[in-house]
Length: 323
Image 1: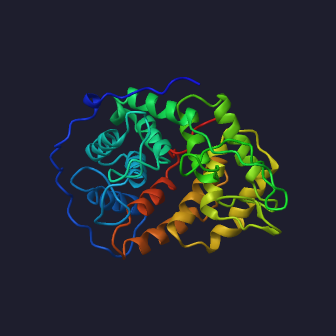
Image 2 (image 1 turned 45 degrees about the vertical axis):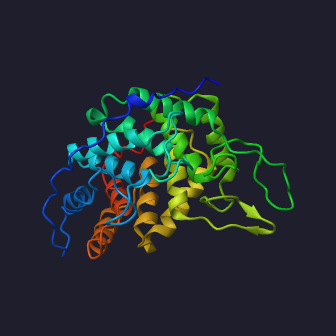
């Protein structure tokens, strides 16, 4: 495997950036058909002074919500200066070995590396100048793999020898970090790389027999696990461009049954992103998204929820890599 690109300390983006002026606060109320611009403006205004977003309205910046917020604002053609600040902040967070930890407070785990790479890859002209950052992140992803464990048919029935990606280095592979890594590698032009192919194989292997994906296994002991809309949508997005299989069709059927009764933004957004990746967006999707936006605007901002809702709406979602 190619040696990971090392990043010198002096190559980090300069610190001390002056905070951008915040847009005026938006009154909450009935959401019109222009809910996207309302939500995008509120999301842009929720960035902290360092140019990052956390998991709550006022919180320390974290890699996942910052990467998602940057992608969402680009999808809405909004706040380019905010986007650039977010990409710079992610660059400052990146370790010398190319990995991007969850926040500046810890050096690991580094599962958000794939999302940071996606942000640098898919944010258009705002991402100019991040080539070395992208190369280092991709090298780290290619060298990182989940720990294989001995098969145990009495406990589980998935292929435990497949090396996808783990939440924490040195542990077994999980569906969501594997799907994120596959998305990033495909966006970087590595769709045919053996690690990407192994990740795709793992995702198909973990599909549940009646449709959809759980975040971990298919079965534990004698119990078949239940699918989740968010995990299913993320897996389907990662598989976009692959041959259409029975697992894909069953996952889409599961989301078509489940999403009409889903109100949670995380589940609704990822579910719709997954369906859009396979040109199966339900006719009621806009109605569901507008209703969810109305509910979000009645509470303090939760950046990654609002970002995902914005990403679920546009015809060209930057999370979906064309086949």
